[in-house]
Length: 153
Ligand code: FES
Image (tube, rainbow, N blue to C red; front, side, top):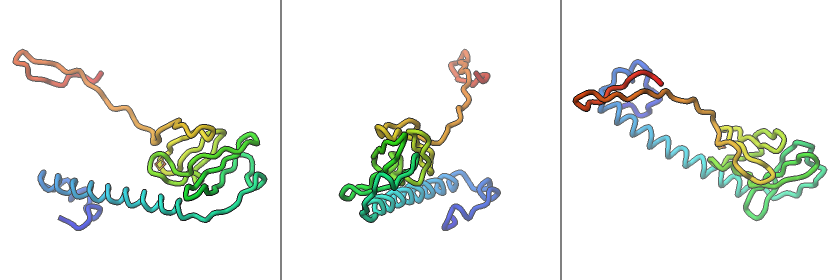
């Protein structure tokens, strides 16, 4: 077993025994989950520790975004049609800062995984990364009740 699964080539992975492949997968998932938790903790701490600063309405251009603080919460300020909206500056997915994303009308898109929020309400408009549909198949039962996969539907 290598210290880091990323060290494997595709060829090496294709030659691993089933139990070894499963063990590598378990190790990789543990590492991946731990890394994700760490990323979220770091982001939460960065948002919490960001500097307090005053913002004037004129500092924010039309369709611009900036941040301010409310206690230890970092708040996103977005100006749309001359009005300024305030929502948490932490994406509802992994807490990454929304002000580093893109504002298109009332919709702010997180730059990491594309979740979208309405700056007027904080409502989730899209959960993020586009998913491709997957194939489905007819299930056929033989006379002896054995299941067989039929044609793609
Ligand atoms: S952190 Fe915003 S979509 Fe993942």
